[in-house]
Image (tube, rainbow, N blue to C red):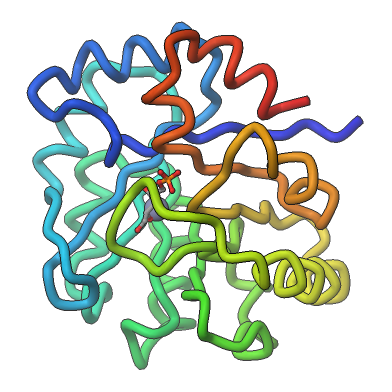
Length: 216
Ligand code: DX5
Ligand code: ZN
């Protein structure tokens, strides 16, 4: 059985108790903490910047997966690396400098990732995956937690898995948005190795059990 990693998204946490929320996720068996950075331009919502990442870095040993939903992410790569990101992922739709920026992230010793939104063709990632440690398929429109999984994402994930087999077989394939206990199996069967889960784990009365179920 392949090892599935679970990455709770702190977008669904209570921001006034961030430390406790992250400890709760770490104690419940999370593998990665997913941090959604939004600028109110690339997406119609605003969250937090590098200071939040730096503060979270001090209170957890888990890897931080920083998902930049910001225009021209190349402007902020160094800031988030300095803050302590372990994975730094940037959207294809947000930059004209995808590959150079991915290369810069890797040169800094941080794991790099490309992200595509639901309406972007998987093919745009041809020739890009070799510069990535992770690739992220958005299965909701970026901007908000708690949305419904877009069903066509399964077909897109099959395509992406095929491309990854050809171009970078060891890449992590992350699916972000609308992951539940009910659809997790279908998503991992289609090739995902990392599941982001916001609403599903944070709203659970037993996150440890929920994480266990998502993994199996
Ligand atoms: C959406 C974010 C996701 C979101 C996932 O823009 O990138 O990471 O928080 O949350 P759920 O699992 O609730 O869909
Ligand atoms: Zn995200």
